[in-house]
Length: 479
Image (cartoon, rainbow, N blue to C red):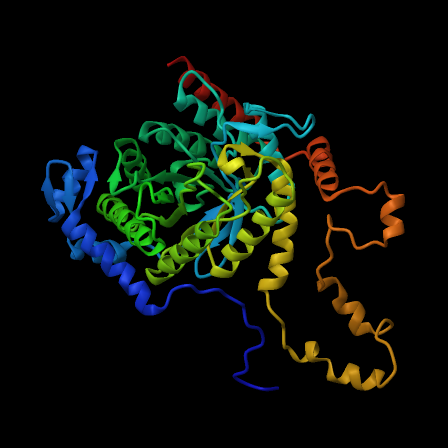
């Protein structure tokens, strides 16, 4: 037995040198200390003032010492749980988990194939689909639920997800009060506030307003999460050339300043509260003014932000499985595949937006099912090559010898199931494909969507808990 020998290496991707990471870090510190950020929330301004930041009305300049203090108190890992209370997502190092996006106003109806405005049942169907899929680890709402009150729309989104999956949930919300009510729903589901804190099945998404601004609603969400120690995903949504410099380096520096300033406020409110770093940066398409999700700049910048999260020892929110295509087609498949591979190789912890098409305006359940297959393939790529003694198989090669075959070997029987075997991609002969109806990948994927929706039954929530949730939702709706 050899000692001190690496059995298996994990392939990875790196865009930034150590010096470039430091350039981004120190550039952000210069922006925070000299340019400042606009803070549109009175409590956040008070926290910053008391900590020694320089306040000029709503413009706040944050000294390096406050950033250092915040980084020293922020946990380097966040653990999330499922609805059963099982801690099953460990956001640390380069461990990657995959999930959907949120807030698309439109969807592609899986039964008619038509694009239409989304409804609550579409959020429920998405959650049900993801509950079944092995490689989808968490869910976001995928669609907006239309409601006269935007706050209640988010409540109904969370309700639809809760009832149709046991997997961890990431929510969007209108403001802090909205988050507070969603937390109450999660506490009812998990048993108590303490149970939710120990086994958080919920994380909350919030976003700065580029350039260099934190809006009141976003900060109210940040502060309520810090107070209750609910994992906060604080992100940027930058369009280089519009809300940040057109150059990726400049956009990343600005993004980092926005993220670090949010982190400072979060940790001033509650040192040690769980915080997840990341977001999206893409270059505006000057021909269409679109926010392109399939652009290489988007996914290179996401990889760079992942590296900055690693630099700070923070869990990272990343992106993959999304497209600018208008339906699940060859473009959608290509953009989903390469973005998932880049996000996986760069080591993002929460890789979201699976199922986005139409530049984030439309959701596609077919895109989710295709991405589930791609993630399985990618896991085989990123697991590398095992060099355990049994994998080297020298004795097996010796026993078979020149001119033999390995089909009847027990070693083959023991190991062949480890080889990637696609569920959706065809490897049959052309003749077999013809006799099977010449089905395209799009046909196969959509049939799988319909099969899952028709047959999968998620684990139900206890009737007593459902009654409590219904009572709370009726009360909130009436108000």
